[in-house]
Image 1: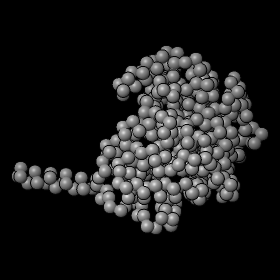
Image 2 (image 1 turned 90 degrees about the vertical axis):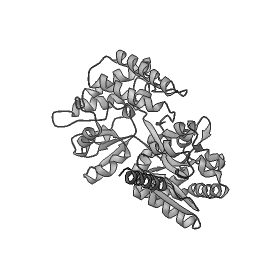
Image 3 (image 1 turned 180 degrees about the vertical axis):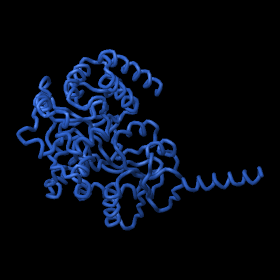
Image 4 (image 1 turned 45 degrees about the vertical axis):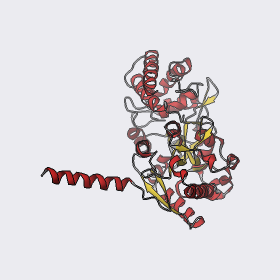
Length: 400
């Protein structure tokens, strides 16, 4: 029986490692976690422009965790992957990424949205070819909020909330205990979560001021309920007149019959700065092990050159409403007449790229926990800032 079990174990392990092998010959493998419509655009375009290269797109769940395990394996890693820019620093530090400028001249990006190149750069090296970007938007229901009521400043928004919030409806809602959503208010007070050296910056007067100011708005939002599902459902069911949310909410809102409008983020009167949320840049990255073979290196270079084409951005915007990284795409009417895309482009003028530093993995957790303690559990702001700063520093020290 033991021999049979041992033989079965060997068979299973052999099958597993064969399955992990991409069986690389002349095929270029690209991992992703994107919706089918986006991948179909890229696949169709590359098949048309590069018919001699077999490009295989593979959907991969838990993409970042898998790359940590196999990113240095020529047999198991993909050649390239499509993902947000915020893991660039982590993967550069563990040595699995190839610089994009090893394949493409830096001046090829002269016509790109500046934010996208900034986001894709780590320690002055470019590790991503940006395809499109996303940021939070101020959205409103035109049937509930007149154009004349759209807030220019945060005090306009506050007064609107007072006048339009009752037992049945909210004037404005947002996920106020989530670090990603609250960061925009912090940036609006010249504060931040992490500095460019990777040091936590929570226990500062600017962050304290931002959170204290934000609290008066939270008084007119759902008490003790700030999670994704609750907040978005209120807007989708027309029980909230306006919201700060991501572009991913737009298809659902339109399907629910909401007469959707977009506006610039309100200016914070105390600072003169807008609420400035994070922006995420989605693009294609190259694994270092993929370029070690001369023939594969050449094919990867040709694929990257092809993806610089402005038509890619136009097609992506048309099928999925994403904002192209290439500025030339906005000269096309399919893009310039798309209200969602143009709202994103306008929002990006105030947005800040998510830090691509490895330390940010710690900060998402400690900052959200701090916000929950303050906004949902009534803890003192100063005490929580101090505690979150200390915890963040300790966890980052352990990382290093």
